[in-house]
Image (cartoon, rainbow, N blue to C red; front, side, top):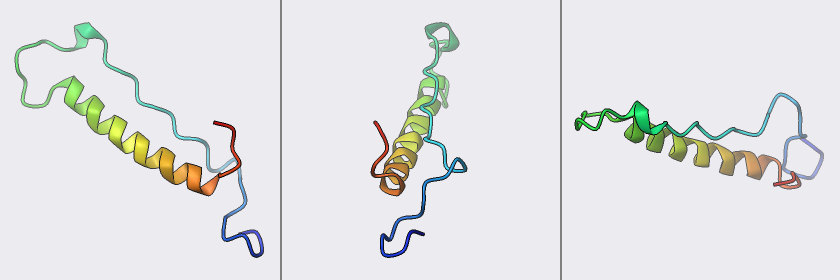
Length: 64
């Protein structure tokens, strides 16, 4: 942590999270699966958003 800052120093060990890849239309069989690829994508996207928000708190000066 930087003295008096309350923030850890930026390092290469804390890369910016990357968004999940959106499924291609042909990846969904449209048969009403209990767990669709779009459901999995929505979950991954929410997790990414949470990780990105936490990363931004750790790196307030990072270019967005």
